[in-house]
Image (cartoon, rainbow over all chains, first blue to last red; front, side):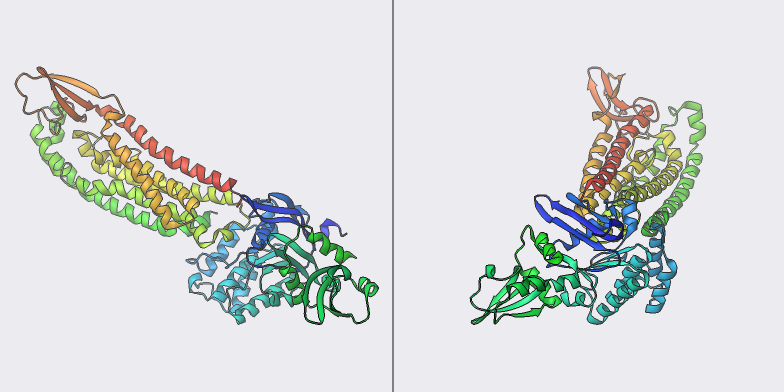
Length: 306
Length: 298
């Protein structure tokens, strides 16, 4: 394993309970610095909870999450300074001008890159004198993103950054996020329920469902550790190599997405079986559709490491 | 945080400044007029000479013109209502609007922890409200000074416009509205709830303003064999014969009248009790708001 210092994020049995129900439970993963992390899950999967725990807006009920080796402690200046957060619906003060928003950023952060903020507005053609409420949705998102970037934190966390935007504004915003990440070595976490949007961008994947971690790991490793196996019927799950994540049966064939490396597959191979690589979409969907199981994270991780 | 607080509350600050200007204009115009009439009626000389006993007619005419049914009745209601309404308007959005519009996620994810964010804002805004209250109180006290020489300061207007009451009522409504905004996460709802709470408390305070229930009343017995028609609760020179006493009850007991009254020197005692009640509720609400925000983990 890598040393903690090289990890941007490390969650250790992280959990958050709201009253009697768990919004997130038993979440363990480690994200190397410089990653672009896609956080995927249906609505209510616990994405926003995980992000709020990371940013320091929520305190964990159990376990912990560390950002660059330091545990996130809710509502402390040290934790808040390490993370830039773009909240869902990119909230801004509607009555403020863009310049006022930046003034607020300057007043509330020790590190604040005013030059970067102004230069981005210049590039985007947004006047600093404009009131926030007169800006389009895409422009508001850009101002909010600029606030997050100008905070100059090493970790940038975006919660559904483009959910409310039209397709053009989506492309623009994500291009700017990636530009900023590449330019300054940021680690970025992007939560979204739009899978296709993340496929092009992220190199680390976290899948949540029902408040449970379904899958976490570097995208390349995950893709290498999963395969689509087409076999003649009837073969029970137990007859297939690795762990069956999802399975569709037609009249003559079964297609199973299995967590198994090439070695395992070669060992188990029978005549008439066909092995194909999985796509990012197939992988994510398979884990999203799988009913949450307690020890999933362990299964997925053992698949990655084997 | 100073700039942020100023930027978020500057419209309210301007409204307060406008209110101060209106109050000042009223106080200067009406106060000057009142002072002129006070001299024209020969009251300063008469009061110096007889302590009030010899100038019943002049006092009655002066009081009728300015206090009872006079211009004071115009500003009586605003002096009670403005601190409440202003407190609601400033207090309810302070947390309520952040929670309603989702801007809390922006505010609390900057480098200032949310408890420090809240205490800084509350400190500055409360300071501004205290300053506003002090200026209005000073203006009203100056305006009312001639009347204070011949009437009781425990009557509604001087009582609600002088001393602690105006500022305390303002801070009470503000504190309750801040807390309601935090708990309800909604500006309008917070205003309604805080208004009801402030109104109930103000009703209580005004009931106590007939101070009967708060302080053991002072009584005075006046010999009276044959009806004593001139002795009433509403007379300009109180039945006790001492200007500034507030007479609220006269009952007959044999050949005597029993006069229940609040002595003039009880003004500050009452101010501290009633103003203190307002202040306690207001500051406790602010304290609870800070505590709840600090403690809440969701």
